[in-house]
Image 1 (spheres, rainbow, N blue to C red):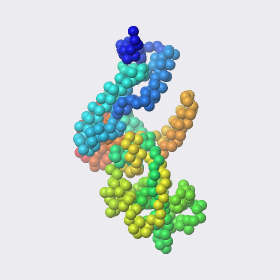
Image 2: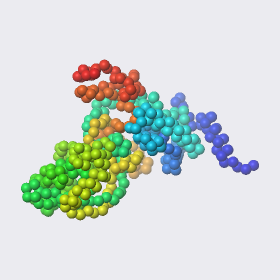
Image 3: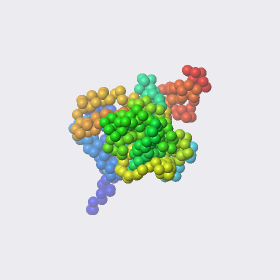
Image 4: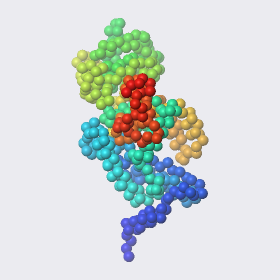
Length: 443
């Protein structure tokens, strides 16, 4: 009799299911080993990389069972957010703005569920020992109820707040994203040597920039305090080209005197360096780019253009006026959206934030108390914690996710929270639990 691999596989897969070989027993007296299994995004079938990652986790689960542990290893899927929305938009050739909210959500749900069936079978074929009896997916009402109740309690503890703050923004997905959702890629770009002029004498000063489209938001110019070439400029004013705006020259040690001409224009907001300078000098924040990646009225005649079109148009205008002396092609490391690859911008927008910065020392202290396997992973955590410069933006301008359980008074901005007993609730559909604002009486 010949060996039939597929039939043998099916036989044992059926046996594992029927006998519940991998079941977590809540009544067992065995020591519990709990695996915080990362839920797989339901945005496509598993590929080899997923198989490797989950198999490595499965090694640990099987080893612990053999060592006598009662292993908690859930089968779970992440069915929220951008990865699924982006795939749905590409599949159907739509955007969330072109179809109704509920229709878009339903398409996302159907898309996600179709891949859940596929991936569940793939996990079984791989022999992964997850327990299907402790299954969850993140768009289920019970999961969203827990998420919303957690939000309400954190808000009441003062750990969640709403504020206007510069955040990473994806113009294509039209949403804020966290630092952890920004990937960095190398690309070629042009370094443009742009002519500014001193306000008092009209003397030309070259500033090298890759982002001339942000000239309208230039707030300061900086030089290194030890750079003798520009020490005479500190405290004086330069006039920006095109917009004819007077900006002060300051001395700042963060300036690299060897990059470009050693003179930097500080705009709002081109990159993280600009952001740090904004807070250091208390600069006004002007958005030259809107949520859709179009230039705003601040950009003058370039308003309404895409970022790339505005950059080209401004460069052409500067050249026509003799205000670009040269251009160099350079390699640049830029942040892009983790799901669609669009370069991110910093936009000053109203968002919800979870406090994280004040807990950095606590996290580092706990990290010292944990045994790490492998040890170098501890350093990754330490580096990540130390890199956190602002709180975590948790709101997303998307549809397929858990709605924030709150209403905002249009008159005074007061936050009205949902009642825990009403969760899960969709504030875009359901009315608030009060008839009028508790602060201003608005309706």
